[in-house]
Length: 539
Image (cartoon, rainbow, N blue to C red; front, side, top):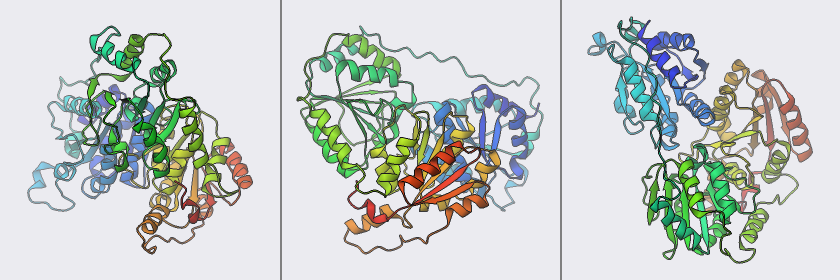
């Protein structure tokens, strides 16, 4: 067994089933070992996109993501994707090739200090040695998944990868980790329950950690039994069904929505933050909690921020902690909460704010898409004006059904996230929503979709501009500059890559195109031609 085999088998033992990247000569042995261990490798066209594909696969499986790159330019080209993993808290393992020790002191071609390059972005950086290779990988994986999750980097030389593993070596399996949680009669939980029971205007603000840790059922029960309205971040959309009368949808990027939601927050006497990290929000939410409200934080880890105060923090695995809180609260009816119809009025106002104002435009695109897709669909959405509008209009019914870059907000994420989710075998249609800018950053990945035989629908909201930046220029009283784009025939490009491609300019045409795309065997691209001016005042 080669050291590369030992590494690959350890990765497999920890649940890694997919790897993404672009190989170079320094990692060919590692690639061979991954294939031998049953870890499927997906060839991306860009290393940053590959890192985001790994993030998409990790989001839907819960397993760590794996990025394989060559040395120097390969790893350097992945930096944006690794930075995204750091701010999006993706458990990502990066394996990069390096030059052999014997020539490293005199050889300079493609050489840079990988660990120094990645130091601000990764939890740790290790170089594999012959002794303890499997243990180093197991340590790196444990560090990557430890809350808050994040990327860890591994350097591996080609000669070492091909070397026979020491005779006593064997793959390292993960330990069985047991996470004790508070019981419902724990004094801490009883104290928290007592504060909730005596509140008249409680509200829940929930984040991504609650969505990805399996806390949805306990959260929905807490909302239902205690009649507490729930606001989520964009990243946590679907944590509770968003058509529920007590769900106020996602928040964080829309000043229009914030006027309503922050007004409700200002009236709260108790704010319960659950799995919430303010990196998912924006500056408008700084110091948003009223001085008269109790702020109680249920979290798997203390988030690093200075956005607002926390009066009491309960740290532990969220599903069990919320279940214990539900037990402590009991099944008796809660006291009257909020003024009659106040939460419903806010929900109705949000719906009115984002209702389609015209027969065609980005609002109509998202309304038609929502009507066309089954609940089993997974939607990824790129950064831009379209993401803000989409995230306010879309009613998600289950957690992790909407994937996006919400902390880092990088462009070009939607297509790679969709590819990663598709490679991991997520059921139901997979739709990647993009703007002109994000698609043109990642056009080459249409070749990845084709070669992997994936069924992905790419919906391009084509407004021939960087619409969000143009809006910000207008808000600053500036003339538009550097934001106009030419009109590319994306449908023709999709066909050139071997997929189906259509351009639409009406709801009827979009509905028909979506029907064909969802029924198709391969990938499809639909370009919805809209006017960028439709975003003015939209959110």
